[in-house]
Amino acid sequence: MDFTNMDEGREDGKEALHYYFSHEERIKRAPKIVQDYYNGEGIQSPKGILKSLVATKANRFGLFAIAIFCAFIYVYSLIGEKPYRKTIGGAEATLAAFSYADEIYASLTVRNGNDKADAIKGGTVTVRFSSIDVQKAIVGETEDAQSYTGEELSVRTKFPDYDIVAVRAEIRFQGETKTLVARVVRE
Image (cartoon, rainbow, N blue to C red; front, side):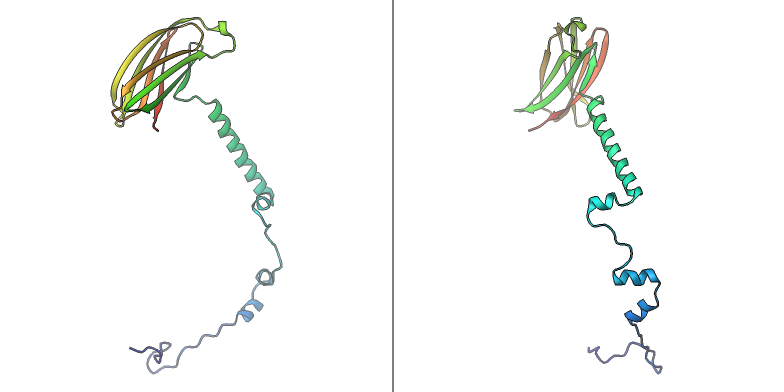
């Protein structure tokens, strides 16, 4: 079917519709700000991302607020308490877990949390390790007790890997009890 000779601009028996549009005439009748824009005059935005971020007072305030927010998050991430590191009885305890050859190895390191070595009295550190699977169920448990003298102490254990995703350690030292949780690092 050939549509080239078909007239679609009118109803049968009436005159065809004609549209006239002149861009120059439209610009002549436009407001001054529109005319200036098309002529390349008027307000020009600064070139470059850094210049545009500091071009106005509001932009500078927004950039300053973002910088303060980022600094706050960075400082909080450094000093905030992490689930795998806590202080118990004046000593800092750190839990780590990793997978190797179908086994999950967990290591709890207890070291002096203060600069003064005599600040912490020795005692017995009791640790109950629990392996946690994907459904957050406890798959296996082991318990160990070792003597802490103020120097670095490492308590280690291993579990068979039954889709274990995390290891939890419940530590009892000098009358305090804390729970640490570390995700299993897989290589």
